Image (cartoon, rainbow, N blue to C red; front, side, top):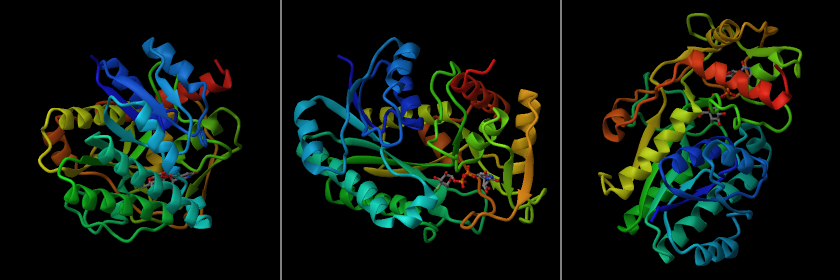
Length: 342
Ligand code: UFG
């Protein structure tokens, strides 16, 4: 019988792509999502891609009783991939308690249920934000973490610590934290992708919305950084590549390959691109003109970061495969599909 995987936040951006990869690998998926930042129609589009509609339960995982009742009902779950969390850096500064309560509360409820209902494995969405501005680049898993720049970033660091401590106390529990760099792009079918509510905070949705005519121009935050063209550098990873890393992490745990019952990996491409390089690549790949202007730096932004992926590549046997060009083209195809453009 197919193994059942619980995907929390499975109608969200990275979650929905991971559901597709899991189903294509023959896993049976149940999604839990409160739809606070995603739409139920995502299920239709997952079904269009894979031919299978995942089971779905709508509730808030920070509610302990509801989480417990869920595990009573679904007694065959083999592993969890936990995406569900608040993720807006700026909003977390305004509403820190909401962020701590939601992001840590839901993780703790899940960990408790893992023990109670004997679900041993969890993959957790962490972030390269835990490294802050590293002193040495690229960052390896050994690079020291730095104090978080925002309550959002702090929830990721604290959640990692909670898992580490819980795994130490419970030998039967096995967790892997994946530290994502910057996920971008969309599924090659253009049926699922990133759909931010309101004005996008992140670079690529802002670019595609500007290209689609929803925004007048892109603001590039700062061109006086210590980089070749003065704009900030990130490691942009294709969301499908990232989704596949989760499937590989699940396999590692289900096959008993983990070296420790708490592990963490960088998930990036190993290459950094500046904002300006990304903008120019987008224009070149899509042939669409993009209005942009240089403005002041954005508060809290780091100058540059990219991953050393050697450890993850070797241990997981996984590597990001898609090119930046292919990924930007997929982001544009998705935006056009959402807006009904040709
Ligand atoms: N940028 C612009 N203009 C925009 C938006 C972004 O110039 O309109 C620049 C930013 O200043 C930054 C780069 O594009 O230099 C990438 O910005 P994003 O907002 O897309 O991504 P960040 O690296 O700031 O943040 C992302 C995630 C966070 C996570 C962080 C580190 O959104 O959740 O990576 O892991 F915390």
